[in-house]
Image (cartoon, rainbow, N blue to C red; front, side):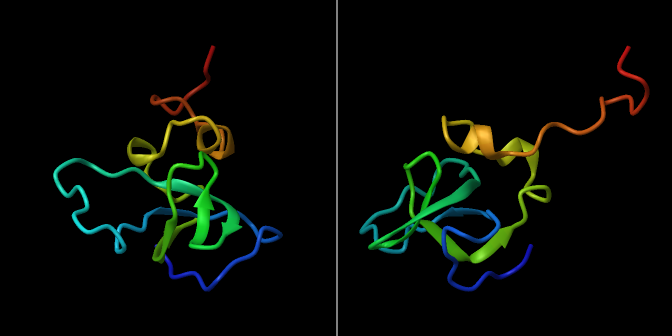
Length: 93
């Protein structure tokens, strides 16, 4: 995990959780997912799925984001790197 300064659309995509700091009563009872950075917006950087403004205080590279916590919504899902080797680590035949 690394910290990321303000980014532009031309930079390498990065991953982060949503920024809920501006919600009066954010949901803190369910697991949160990690989104892929998308386009800049007035409020900050939007996720590729368009569902969230991202928190730039805690970020991951796309490869380092835990697979179980990745956003599976259209937009983010297509940006995640392809799955790595099979669970057994051997030949996929």
